[in-house]
Image (cartoon, rainbow, N blue to C red):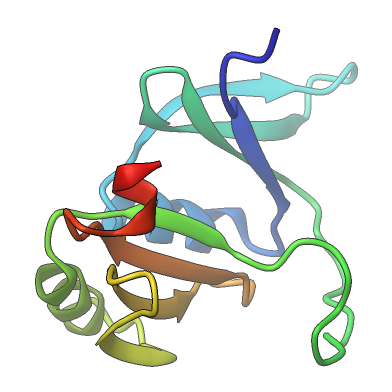
Length: 135
């Protein structure tokens, strides 16, 4: 029935800044754009991998205060080959880390940062003995 996760969508406050982060810093490619019924920019599709996308919607206006441990969306996790390489790359591109590289309870290596709108992103390098690799 379900083949996979097709996309994750974010409303963004500053599209150019978000495109720079996801494409310029993280290295994803802008796949295509969709306009609304009046011909205005509406969505930018960012290709993560074959059949996997991040949708960036124009017009985000207000970021609500985030309560501690809210119910709902928590973070986006992006799998990487090297946790040290991505951590260094993020820092060199002016992206501060919320959490420096460390090994998690699942044995995978991780570090954490935020996109321009404050959405949490976990970068994870899989350990061959992790629960995810054995599942």
